[in-house]
Image 1 (cartoon, rainbow, N blue to C red):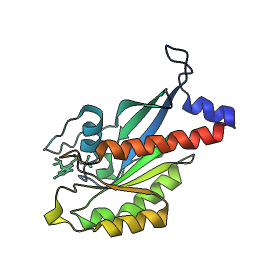
Image 2: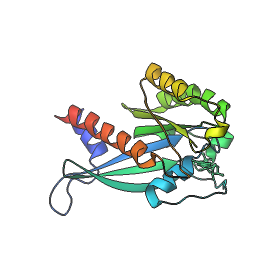
Image 3: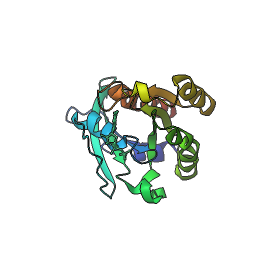
Image 4: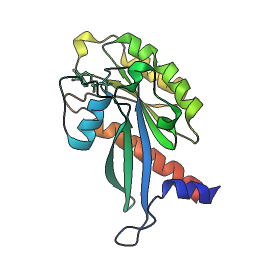
Length: 193
Ligand code: GDP
């Protein structure tokens, strides 16, 4: 089992200095227009696009961080509009070690969809997944329809991390991804040791 786990995770067994390299898949899920692709572009490229584009087809970006002197790469997948057609398939979830479940704090129905996304994730995932509940668009305070307490309560009930972010003004975006990456790293180290 441990060998299988290592094969899945340590895609590239050594870097230039002979140390271990890790590559983890992370998926971003949630209703249309909650800001999934902007969270990813903000994190991976520090870019924000004010116009939502409905490009179809899965996209991912790779981002590296250093933990315990090791290079840890996250391959972060965006549904790229497929959720509009309920077409997010098991292939999208396969091999994911982390997930960001995103809603828009200014649109209550997107928060109410979270349990459905969580079910999807549980149905399709094949391993322990580090999960972060993300209340995006926290810059839209005057339009808020979901309180911070409601987010926290749902996260506690379901065993998720919780954070509010703004892809627009960058609030907590790096933190959201990095907490998930650290948690995956900890999960994996615990299993391997
Ligand atoms: P996706 O369909 O979930 O990938 O959502 P997008 O990233 O395409 O964003 C949908 C719309 O919301 C776009 O018009 C974005 O400019 C806008 N948006 C995304 N994130 C934020 C945010 O943090 N704050 C505000 N005010 N708008 C955002």
